[in-house]
Amino acid sequence: MLRPPALRPGDSVAVVAPASPFDRTSFERGLEALSTRYRPVFTPGLFESSRYLAGSDARRQNELAEALESPEVRAVFCARGGYGAMRLLEGLKLPQANKLLVGFSDITALHAAFQAAGRTSVHGPVVTQLGALGARVAEPLFRLLESPSERPVLRGEPIARGVAEAQVVGGNLSVLTRLLGTPFMPRLDGAILFFEDVTERPYRLDRMWHHLALAGAFRRIAGLALGTFTGCDDKDLAGDRVIRELASATGLPCVMGLPAGHGDDNQSFALGARARLDGSEGTLTFLEGAVA
Image (cartoon, rainbow, N blue to C red; front, side, top):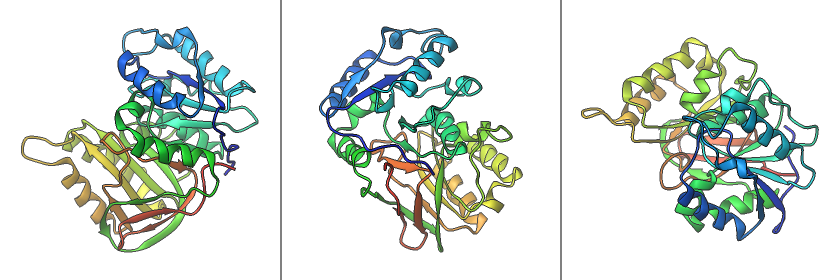
């Protein structure tokens, strides 16, 4: 996997909105947190809104392309997830020089395109989340972006015994299943598959899981690393109970409840990097950094 160059304090970083519009107050708080370390730049079009999108596809496509191509910009931070990044995939052209991409949730569509093209990217907080989560999330993110030797260890709940060492791919479960059968789905063969989700009822989690199963995903991967499933409970059934039962049935090494996703602790890590999943210890230990 191609890794982007490490960031340095004071570097210019672009903030883009490739998906949904966002709350201005949350954005300003996140921008303030980002500004303590880097020099964020963005265009006025960032604040546009068209139905459930942050402006037209053309606006968002051009904004993303300019940020990826600009020689002054060292990294690209996403303002928010929501919905809309998938609409940009057909026109997405990755520059020859790799560049850091940071975000999660709907940004999974862009992450998948990066991994399908042999590049790493960073599954981490969007700008509107960064201010609310505070230093316990921001400081590890900055270390990950600035040091090749920063290799996170995420701890969760042991679900199924076994050890797997492989590249980590995935992201948001709902978005990932929509990429099956497209050229933007990253290779799953021998991989550790990570996913998380938010406000999906238990039967919908079950349906998406079986979509992956029918596509042969669980016959191809080496292990499962599961993040948080926030707000996924029904009145008489917990979403994480459904996920736990489905994961156990695969027989794959599995850890659940890793601190990554829509909860109040969204720790950053490199998609596309190799890691060691230990289903007995409940750990996902990265063996490679996010940057060169």
